[in-house]
Image: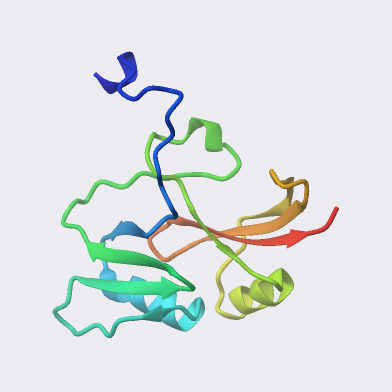
Length: 147
């Protein structure tokens, strides 16, 4: 089992360059396509009535959204994130104007679930807000502010 043995030498880091893409499994790809394009304003590939996936892109990061046939759902929370089930937890986008994003989300009737500030590794502070897409997936927006 991976968790019980050291597979890679700890003194040789992997030569990873950057994150290339993210995969998101959803139950209704058409509803999520509408949310990502019309609410979040993300560039995506077109989607037809029988399509089961689309590709979104923001800056140089792509994400693949595909329709799953699984009915299993896991509800992840912000306030009790330490008890969330294992697996990928949330998706965060960077912005230069978080107040504008918050206003736009509220205009689209997307409730903000959590807002605040947090210290970042580079010594700055991040101002964030979190919300959910129509299927309940956690999404965040972060703005770096100088401390």
